Image (cartoon, rainbow, N blue to C red; front, side, top):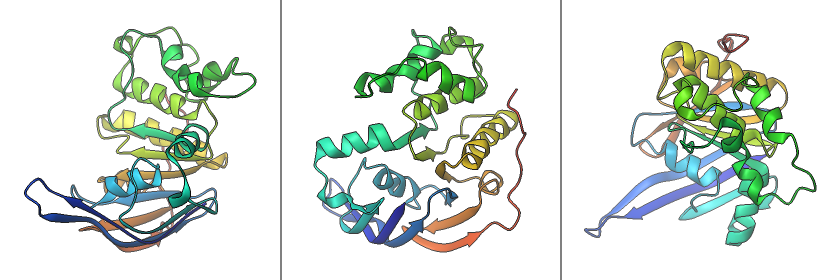
Length: 234
């Protein structure tokens, strides 16, 4: 699904100095994998995630997504890929405070060209255990429930690839475990997931861990026995 070859990303600071956020990153991720990208702040993991999600472009190297060279995609085509093929989950939930859980989840459908979108929002909420919370506003939900709404929003267009950037960073350990149970369930159903985290315990729920330091991938290994999260979110 994902093939990165020699990816580099360089930013120019206001004082004119260059910062190498990514240096010669090569990575291949197959369909159905659950991969954690681990590193401390400033290691380049979020920059890499932005490139994977077509939110940023590399300064050098190539990124092929399902065989498509993303360098050849115009802005409109990139937007279509993000809407149809990629779901995003972030550390901050980015929910609209005055709208219901269902309305938040249905937002991506406003840009969909599907012939029918009826019931997709409810289905996505049910898939994360919130079928009984569709009318609740974010202020009426716990942090863990808000993140589950955000996951449902990422799923509503039924993307093949789910990108999660520090999805448990604002949650207590129990809520984080519940969220990881959802990700593991989604992965078992065939979804490809790439998860960025600084938390080794969270990373151990994944099948594979790629470790980043100073813009480079310094280790990439399978997890012999991934940690099993709670089977059902409460």
